[in-house]
Amino acid sequence: MKDESFQERRERLNQLVFEKGNLEMKRFFNLDHRVYEEGALSKKTKELLGLAASLVMRCDGCIEYHLRRCYEEEVSDEEMMETLSIGLVVGGSITIPHLREALEKWYEMKEDG
Image (tube, rainbow, N blue to C red; front, side, top):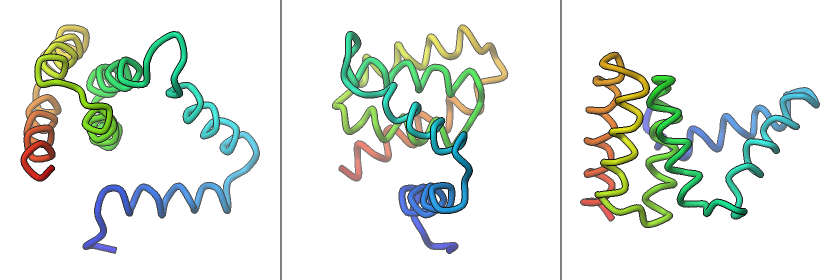
């Protein structure tokens, strides 16, 4: 399992929840999926909101997930910097280590295509 990618690990662990989790867990996962669907706010906007919230909460796995989704939604560098700035202002200096990691991952994703 050491060599699995972030996405492979996430999918494997989600499958474990779907197989072994109770009804409440499954309902929450469904809600989490549905809230990011296109609506009054675009998927792109919702992913940026998710990223800002994840930075404030200092959840590295969530930050990486939303970074990947932002990349898929074709977020610009400018949009990314503004979103991370909001997370920094709301979360304070304790988010700085997570902000650094987020920036590194963002530019790695962009370089790797």
